[in-house]
Structures are given as C-alpha cells and as structure tokens.
Image (cartoon, rainbow, N blue to C red; front, side, top):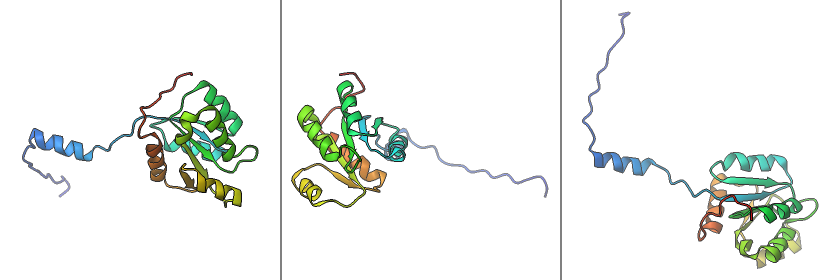
Length: 160
C-alpha cells in the first residue's frame, strides 16, 4: 500500500510478415493530390473546403469572374461550383468551361443548397455533371472528386 503496483505483460514477438499485413490493413489509402478550384460566393463555405481538403491543393474564388481569371493562369483537376450565386451562376460557369476549357467539362462538379427553377431542373436533366446537394458529407465530396478525376493523372500546380 502506498508504493504502487507493477504489472508485467509478456507478448510473443510478431513475425515480419504479420507486421506487414497489419500495417497494410491499417494504413488508409491516401488519394492522389489534386488541384481543386472551388467557386462559391459564401466565404464560410470556401474556408470549409480549405479545411476539409488539406491533402489537395485547393484554390477558392468568390465568383465565376474570379474563376475565369484563375483558369487563365492555373491548371485544375476538378472544379466545384455553386449553382446559385448573385452575379453569374453555375450555368454560366458551365458555359465558360464548355467554351474555353472543354477538356475540363467532365471535371465540373456542381453544388446547390437551394431549390431549382424549372430552367435549372431542365439543365440538370441534360448534363451528366455531378451535383452535390448542400450540406453534403466529406465522403460524398471525396467520391465526387475521385469520380471526375479517376482517369487523369494529377495536373499539379503550374502556370499554364
């Protein structure tokens, strides 16, 4: 009493093969580092993307105009774009990408937190692009990024 207790635990040593098996089972697969452009007029949402995607190179912009400027100087693996914004909308972003960066059209992911107008509903019936409904879990976001970038090597952050 007052001195403490000593426990001895004796475990048999693991084999090297067992250690490799355990390590490979535990290690999560890290997705390739991608360059992601996020277009959203809400500053909080832009900060959220920067926080939850630290393993990617994330550039956030508040408008389609700013996205247009970013696309002139950088190459992106995926573009995430809010549908409803005050000036130019996600539909304008789709037109911009289709016209000036058609190679990225399949890499455009839409996000929406609101109800769709009849025009938007018709638009989304005719385009194959993913549209995530806000709020969405990180896992859905990661799956969408993986889906649109699956067949391409990471572009990296370089001027273009």
